[in-house]
Length: 262
Image (cartoon, rainbow, N blue to C red; front, top):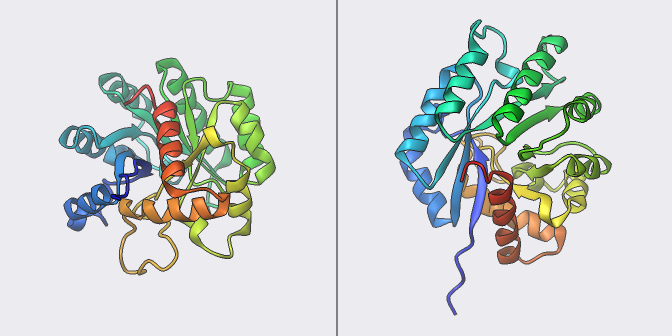
């Protein structure tokens, strides 16, 4: 019997210059691997228009999301938030990738929080889902999300690296929990335990292409959206699930999480 086509959705950064020379072929490989939608996240002012252009050029495949990543807040223009709001009002976009990163050096924690909160509040005001980056800042992130009322219009915690016991709290605030190619690494016990702890209706998978390549991927090549198939395979093994069923489940979850955009 013919194997059923599996539907998958994943977060990535198609506008990244590392993908530019291979983008058309990489997207063809993603389609062949059963990837049905790609949430393409902008991370800096300079790439927001490029993300929107990719979504216009590939309707039904690329879903745009725009944000100022904590790595990119230095040097932002004075009117960055007004620009972001104008672009969001003009197109069905998510807000992200936004967040906190306490592993970044040097950094200004107060500035990170101010930029994050401004975007989180903008998403709430416009009724948009958010995509959140968090690294080594889980306690403070949970405090701020409680303070701000969670994700009333949907949200994903991108490439989750927190503790398993934080997951119920995040889920109760309206978040889906997403896992990347990091879970394909055999030594990532914390990630495996967290993946197993997520409720079935809150689980997402992603590649974060061109970063966070799965185990065994050549280091000289940018990670590709087609590698979502490998993330799915690892997630199914960790959770003791069948790949087709988990693909359908994560697709349904993604369509619900980002329902304002699709």
